[in-house]
Image 1 (cartoon, one colour):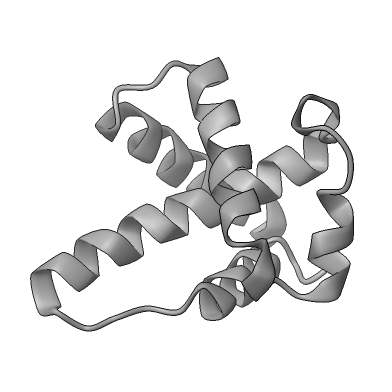
Image 2 (image 1 turned 180 degrees about the vertical axis):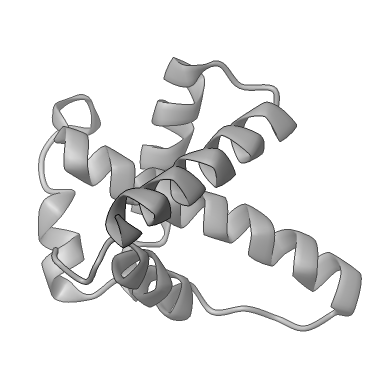
Length: 104
């Protein structure tokens, strides 16, 4: 139940972020993959492996990881703009992996 509740919270956060950016589902998917690939240098090796190949061939689970990561980046950007406190992509990758149960 805790996992399904967590999943619901994650999906809600993704939906809110997507709406905030005025993107439809496909635009959001492509944006998330693009954003994740931009920050791959900061990702753990096991995450980098998931993004090998063409962006259009990214697996469903990897797209979801990219969406979680992108939602975290947007939140971090907003917080950084408000507080002038920088964020680190490596920390956001670790948080995204942790939110998905650490099973990557």
